[in-house]
Length: 391
Image 1 (cartoon, rainbow, N blue to C red):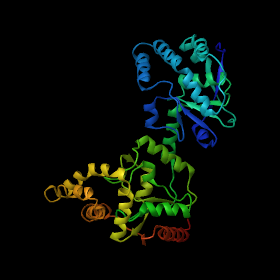
Image 2 (image 1 turned 30 degrees about the vertical axis):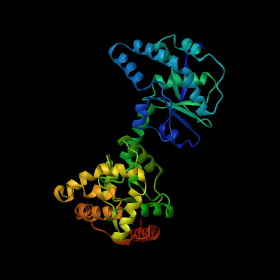
Image 3 (image 1 turned 90 degrees about the vertical axis):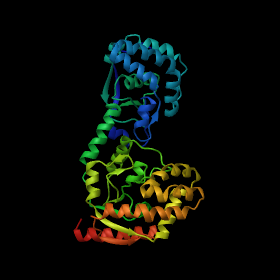
Image 4 (image 1 turned 135 degrees about the vertical axis):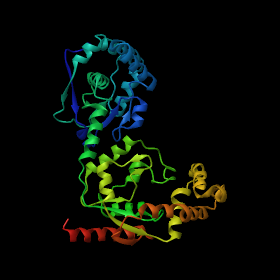
């Protein structure tokens, strides 16, 4: 396959890619890059693994672009069959019988400068049906090369992402920095009162009203908040949050009351301003109900217990090393779960929450013993409030 004088690869903007319901997004970056953050629903088909990427990058910066290209070409040659095969599999497109290594050799023998000049881009005027959107870090030679190569093999639905992942990150930052909040409300209350449960029920009643920061951050926002949850990077949190904000709110925005950090994720300024300045609705529930909620959430799954055990010595230290050393871990080991949760609430979480929330005023108090009924009360109260305000 000789390289044509000029091969123009169609490109799409990040917002177009995100709106394409039938698109297959393929991220060609290394696994470590992908794990840090990626477009929603993207598939990682790396051109280089983490070690190979480091080698090519070092050669590029310390030796020369030509040396990096030669090494990358050799690595791609070994991987081309599996790489192209996986792309065509994900695209649900039959791979033609061909000697891919020979075609790659012929296609890349011109060198990095000639290849870079030949692989231009052009804005995609109309996205094809079931597009295959390929991208690398910044829409450079990695993605342009692969996109052009698979297009030459017949996959003409392949397009590139304008600006690559960096372009997508620019879009994410733009959404977060430009967001203008609708009238905002925050569900607040003592730990275990069921704020997350009420928020979920409210979303069922009024789709699009809620912004669940804990779900987006994969963390419940406390010392034990990461138990049973997958870790989330700041970039992943921002990506999920930007997508939620981009979808918009048909009415108000209802949060669960949080601090500025949800786990390790920092709430961006405009969202924090809306949450911190929101009208606060206080949820209340009996201690027995709160113990039940937390026991079900944290201790119902056996695999969570070992993770909880790792955090209990710290909490014992905070309560008092002399009096409580080994007390919490002992209750957990004996499966005296209700006693453990009650002790943590009364001696640690409730005093901490009351101290952190003492400056806040609450517009209304709503019984949250039944999350569904509480959600109805929240929805009706907010609608009456908005009617009075003329919002």
